[in-house]
Length: 227
Image 1 (cartoon, rainbow, N blue to C red):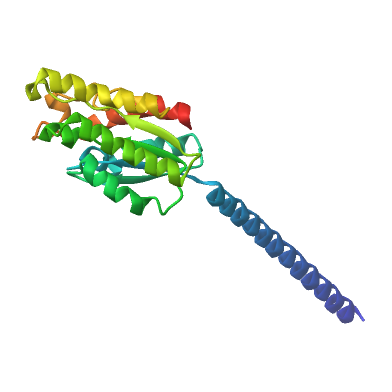
Image 2: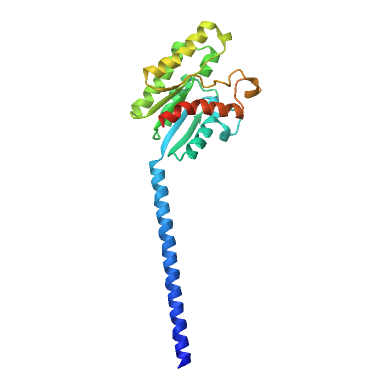
């Protein structure tokens, strides 16, 4: 009789243990499923920021993680903002090349468009009217594809040795484009970096990793309000 009672008790303990184990597993599965749904919703809500530019955007001479668009992504992540940065910088790109390349990039949904082109035009002495026309074409294409896109323009300046009149006209076209298209405007992307030997690589043109941190700061001061 006692043996039967013990067997019955052990059986009950095992059944209860099994039930508790099943409940725990079910709870864990439910939690995992809920977390997966939350993550999927975040991905679905994620908006895209496209940085479209030349070697300055690409981070020439540096690891991509050190370029200012990647630093902007770090800032965004630290604030838990649902934005994904795409770096579409291409070394040597001119505004003429950009107006042809942009169509391919517009195949993906864009919520914020940051335009950084023109520096190579200036260094090559391309007429400012042509640079302005190409920039406007790029902006028009983006707006036509995504009417609700938020636009940001990074201004650029060139050394006075290109000619004082040319340098002044070149600088002005960026503000004119920004005002015409109601774009958020970064007056001079290389503010605090251009001409500073210790913040540029050996060529004196492309910023170092430390220089890109300043570029990121210059852009973020404007982009933060847009986001």
